[in-house]
Every structure is written in structure tokens, then in C-alpha cells.
Amino acid sequence: MTSSSQVDTAGPPALLVTALGVRHEREVAYASGDRVERSRFAGAAIARLRGDLAGGKAVVLVTEKARQAHFEALAAELADAGLSADPLIIPDDLDAPAGAPPVRLADVLRGLAEHVPAGGRVVFDITHGLRNLPFICFALAAYLRALRGADIAGVHYGALELSADTTPVLDFTGMVRALDWYAAIEVARRAGDFGALADELSRDVGAAFRAGERPEDLSRLINSLRDLSFALRSALPLEAGAHAAWLAKGDRLAGALGAADAQGLARLSLAPVAALVDDIALPEPFPKPPKRGADERKRSVALTRRELERQLAVVRWYVDRGDERAVLALLREWLASWYLLVTGDTAHWLDYGRARHAAEAALNGIAQRAELKLATESERAVAAVWSRVAERRNRFAHAGMCPGVVQAGTDLDELHGEACALLDMAWPGAASGAARVLITPLGLTPGVLYTAVRRCEPTDLWIVTSAEAAARVDEALARADYAGRHRVVLVDDPFAFAPPPWRADEALRADLDAALVAAESVTVNITGGTTALQFYVQRAADRARRLGCRVREIALVDRRPHEQQRADPYVLGERIDLNPDDGPQPEEEESQ
Image 1 (spheres, rainbow, N blue to C red):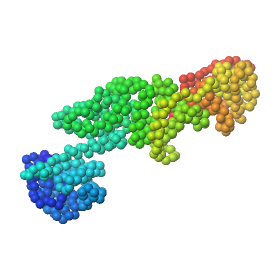
Image 2: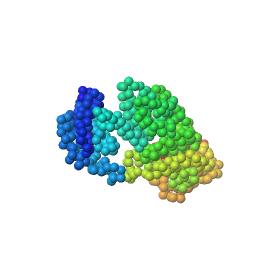
Image 3: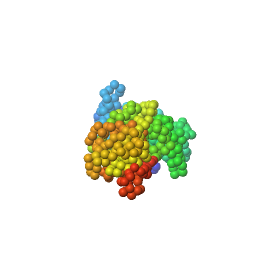
Image 4: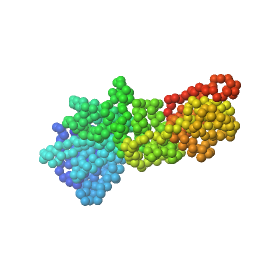
């Protein structure tokens, strides 16, 4: 026990929590080191032995019977030691034997908390009372630490049974560290935050080095635990896997768990980390920033079935903790990665512009086709998961800035299971046929239709035009030797920017959607006719993209003077590809 000369008296003195029994007939010599204090009451002797409690207060846990018998005498001795004393009456059955009514701790906890300021220091004397008193005091200590952030500055026990002459006062303050580790482990298990474990490990390692010990294996784990905690809090499955791999590499974590030394409590408390590391670690860690090569190592992670299985293990970890935001965010990205894997587009799977954007747009198209009942069975299975995940994920991604109230879901386990099922589902590819669809406007000069057909060689032709210009469609197609399917979509006023004709015509819209979904390719000519007609074909291109079609926009150019074009329209013009490398593009980056 600390002597008065060794005590740091900065701040107010600690609160002493002691107890009274019903038998205090004899005076006892309580000893700590070479100091001895005699008293009938361990709490009074401990207050004098410590020397740092003067000017403070003692709260005495006492039954009504014990209060009447001994409280005044104890209060007098505590006053001699410089402490005031307040009784805290406990029910007679608080320390009753087994079989008694349930213990009523709430009033005791509430009463004790009123004496402890936020961050206050507390010293426990657990000598007197029945044998369950240490457990009760341990519960009180845990409660005060959680409620008030109390610093448990001492836990002392006068071991009456160890000596007939003097009674040693044992110091169990170190056992309170188990409370800190307990809290850190609970945070790790329930919330998945390993930062508290890293903080407690840092405290123990720092104390060990100050004491001349060198647990360097534990010291090396501190920053990696913080890195892992950051990655998990932020729902970063690749970074989490890399930090887990660093902990697993060379048995860094396993070796630390198995060592035997004075840091046994710290080592034992790292077990929850080890269980997670085994499930989510990448094959290799990234180089630790700021070392060079971290980005390159991340880009080198291959998109494989095994990697998708590892990421599902990370998702499962969030499911078990009910973290809906993380589950939805990760599953949305996982589905995009899954699509890239099954379509073989894995070379740049982490690059949004070169791969992930197109994958998300394709999944949006699959969902749109499913909604229009134009999807295959496999597509419907994918669309069911994607639509649920993407729509709900957006509510969280946009911080609830949506008309509906955001509520907790109850199907996270089901969503995880459906994602797992996709790994084993045969994917025949998105529905498409051999048709080459061409959509073009047509004005009063038929040469644009002639060049479009000759340059694009469609098998399914859609012509957006006016009734006047439509009169020359058959002539232009005959001159182009076109014998495929064609559909003329008439616009009442080719100069008016009205909604596209298929907006109001359900049958026309269904035919257009069916043609687009069945297409191997969709080409849209944005030149020819009036500006309004060009606007309509661009809306058709947008619709094709929403259905997941790969759309190519072109321009057709006739460099001859206008008079020559009218006199002889059937001269082959130039074709210019405007977006030859573009895949499907959603209207907005986060439309799903």
C-alpha cells in the first residue's frame, strides 16, 4: 500500500467506500509494509495507512442493524483520520445467502453514484461483510467507471485469516485492470471497434517498459490494431484484410497470444482479434505507409472467387453486429465486383472509370429489365439483391436525405445469404441477342438514312421522323439495299420539344424496350433532321443505357454543299464514332 510520503495529492482526495458487519468486538493490527495501524474497523486503519484520504469522505455500506451497532464508532475513527462519513443503507438481503430474494443493487448503485463526481477517484475496502461483498464491490466499481468515468485508485482487503498477530492489508488494485480489458473486449465484440483494445494494450506496454520489461512483441501490435480498427470502422474490406494479414504474418499475433509473462491479461484479451484475423486476412499485407508500394500492392490484389469469399466473411462480421450501413455499402461494392468477375473484366476491377462504373450501370440495367419483366431467371436473381441493396444503401450514403423515414432492416442475414448464393449460380451473361439496332432521326433530306444504313449495317432499324419526311423512307432503304426490320416512329411536330412518343404509347415503349434488350449492339445517330428529332433519339439512347445496353453514338457527315445534297442525296457520307470506348452509362453516378 502506498505510504503518505509516496502519494500524489494533486486534485481532491479519493472517496473511500468501506463496509460494516455486525461483529467488530476486537481491535486488529493491520499492516502494510513496515507500518501498522490498530483498529476494530479495517476502513479506518486503511485510511490511516494510505495517508492520502484526509480531507475526503467515506461512504459506509451498512445494514440498519450494523449501523445502529457500529457506525458511530467507525465515524469517530474516520474523523480522526480526517474523513467525514456517510452511511449508505443496504437491504438486509443484499448480502443474503443463496436462495434469498434477488439482490436489490439499484438503490445502492444510485446512492453511491451520487457521491462520485465525474472522473473522481475511489478507494474500496472489501474487508468486512459477508463473503459476497468483494463481488458486490467489483460490480460497484464497474458501474462507477462506466457511469462516472471513475478512477479506481485502490482495492484493499484486510486478510484477517492469515495471521493471529498482525493482519496484512492486501492490495488488489491491479485486478481492476480486468475491468478495463473487459470493457475493451466488449466494445470489440459488440461494436467491432478494436481501438479500445489498442489503447489498453498501449497502457500495459508503457507500464511494462517503465518497469524495465520489454514486451516488444506486444508493442509492435499497437499501431496495427489501430489501423485495423480504422479500416473496420470505415468499412474498408481491402485495408482491413491488409492489416489483418500483417498481424497474421510470421505469427505476430499468435505468438503474442502464446507468450507467458507479466502481460498475461493483455495477451489473453487479444483473442477476439485473432479470431477475426483468421477469417478476413489477405494473402499478403500492404507495405506500411509511408513506405512506397502500398498503392501498387493494393492494385495487385486479384479479383478471384477466393477474394469475394473473403469479402463476404467481412460482410458476415458486420451482419453479426447489426451494422446495416456497413453491410449495405459493402454488399453494393461486392455485387459490382461479382459482376466484373463473372463477365471476365477483372484486369482493372478497382478502377471506377475503367471497370466499376460500367459494372454498376450494367447491374442497374439488369434491375430495370427485371422491373419491365424482360429479364432472364438469372438476371432476376441478381436484380432482386442489387435493387434491395442499392436502394437502401443510398438512404445511408445520403445521410437520410430522402422523403421516407429510414428505419433499421431485419434482413441483413438474408441479404448476405443471397449474395453467397450468387457465387454458386451459373451466370450465362446478360440477356442479349444478335440484333444490331440502329436508331436515327430523319429530316427532309433522305441521304442521312441512306448513309446510316450503309455505314452501320443494322438488322433492326428505328427511324424517328415526321409524317412528311416518312414518305421517302422506303425509297431511301431501297437505295441502300436494306431488307431488315424497320419501324417508323412519327412525331407530330418535328420542331417541338415534347416528351418522346414512346412516353405516352405503352405498346410502342414495350416494343422499343424489347428490341433494345435483345440487341447485341445499339447505335444511335445524333445527326439529321431537326434539333427536336435529334433530342428524341438521344432520349432513346438514354433509355437503352438504363436497360444496360452498350450504346454507341455516331455522327454522319456529308461535306458537299447543301444544294448537291438535295439534288443527289444518295451519296455515301462519313461516319464518326463519338464514344467508341464507352460502355453503358447511368443517367447519374448513383442512380441505384
